[in-house]
Every structure is written in structure tokens, then in C-alpha cells.
Image 1 (spheres, rainbow, N blue to C red):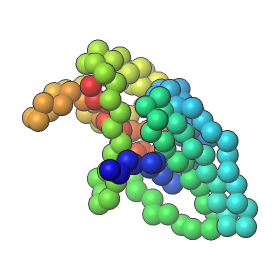
Image 2: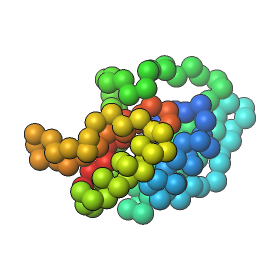
Image 3: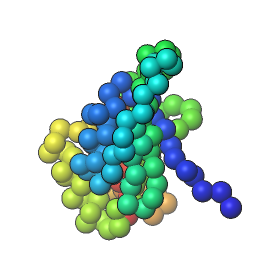
Image 4: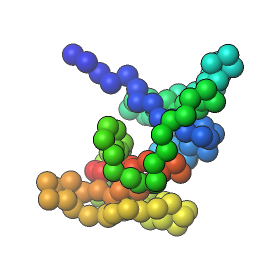
Length: 130
């Protein structure tokens, strides 16, 4: 059996992204790790379910930048199960009021999902689902 240990995202602003996931998704923010000889910084976020997200920044590499919300090959979105349609509606409204981009929804998809799609501060697509 394999369990996904964590998913990592490059960012230009670890603190901004960590604050977003802590405030709106209840993530616990771990200590910052810095390796100055490699120009690397990271922080792990832990969610109540045990899932972890690593936020990484580099001064030594040039990660490819995409326009916010762009569909691309590879990782295309993260999905967070919120447990109810009402919670999806509430968080979508909260994020909209806070000025975050709502790409779609809330809506029921053709395969029966109830979801909203929003963009985090870096333009990563986030699905809010049951």
C-alpha cells in the first residue's frame, strides 16, 4: 500500500501561501527550513487529515511561471473535501468576499461532484468538494 506523503509547490512567497492555507483550510504551519548554500527554503503545512503540503522557494533555479489558473500538463489542481455542500458554499463565499478568484461554481458536475474551483494566491487551482 502506498500513501501520498506530501505534495510540494514552488512559490515566490512562502509566508503568503502558508497564511492562506492556514486561515482558510486550517493547516498547521511548520518551521521554515533554509539551506542557504543551495538557495532553498521550505515549510511544511499539515492538515487535520494528516496530509501535508510543502511550500518551496529557490534562488538557484528558475521554475517556469504560468498565468494564474492555467491548465497545464502535470499537477493541475489540489482538491479539499469539506464534508458538505453548505461548507463548499460558505468557503466559496468567504474566499470571494476576500477577493480571491472563483473560477467556477459552486456547482454539481456531470460526474456527480459538488464543487467550486478557486485560485490560491499563486494562481494554483483548488477544488472545494463535499
